[in-house]
Image 1 (spheres, rainbow, N blue to C red):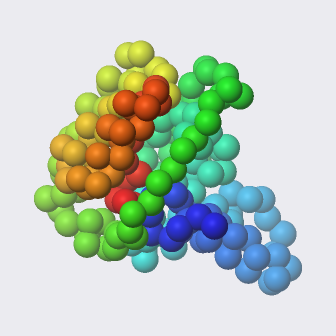
Image 2 (image 1 turned 60 degrees about the horizontal axis):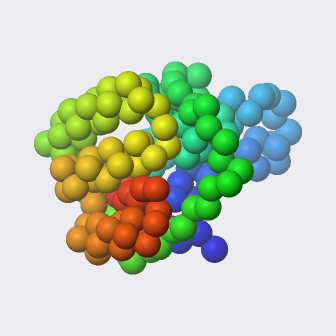
Length: 172
């Protein structure tokens, strides 16, 4: 099971599943774009997600970088040209975190936007998943979205041979 509130996109997945099921149950014929738009709006209104519905819909997942925020059709993702067949993803969770306090703080949003712009610039200069993870780790610490436990785990994973390790944003 994927833990809820730990930064794995469960709110986006649940919102997308719910909107798709509702449209099907109502017999509404449309494309997945409508279901994704509804899911994205629900995540924003409820302060439960980070706008990851678009990433789920494009299947870029961890293989890309969101360079323009927004819902499906607005969000822009730059996918990395890498072979992920030989990669393994190791995930550790410590605790769930409430997103509402973070997503409604104007000061934190400004700090996140400033640091996020710098991460995007750095990663696009040398696009790779390992650099994205390294920059994401710096971002989490700089913005205060990360935790000491998560950072300690990142250090241990890298000492054990991981090419990079990062905090899930907002999740712990």
